[in-house]
Length: 170
Image (cartoon, rainbow, N blue to C red; front, side):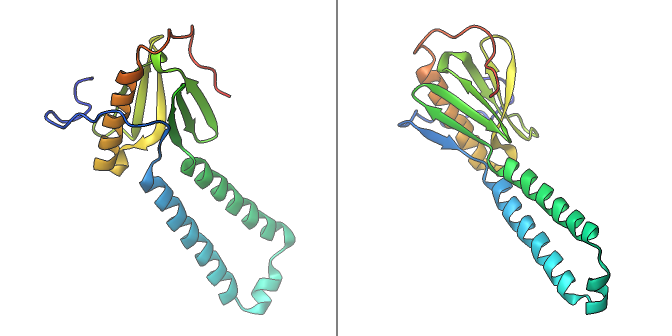
């Protein structure tokens, strides 16, 4: 376990039955709350305009607002879908709209240092990969998830030989 990634004396968590999915809670709640507030604000503002002001908006201006709203929705959806799926075959990491698959022996360690936004997987080929499915903003819940993922990595480390090279994003 890398130094500084968790406090000394915290209990070790035993691996659990698979599959296990790790998802950030804070990001999903923030996306729902702020997305809802943004939508409500836009609707209330639109309805508060007098009819002549609403009629003065061109089709292009209306489409611009819709496109900006869709862009916000796409970004929030990408952040909300981040996860780490632990299965018998290994880890499936979803970071926004990119995915990575690793067998258990490919994952050497997982770290979440104080102040880091999300976990990092250290891989057997010497590279590392961000894993946004566990985020530091979740506090104690994130630390518990890191301990659980570490226990799973240790329990499955000798399952099979690692495949050569880093995993390719799909």
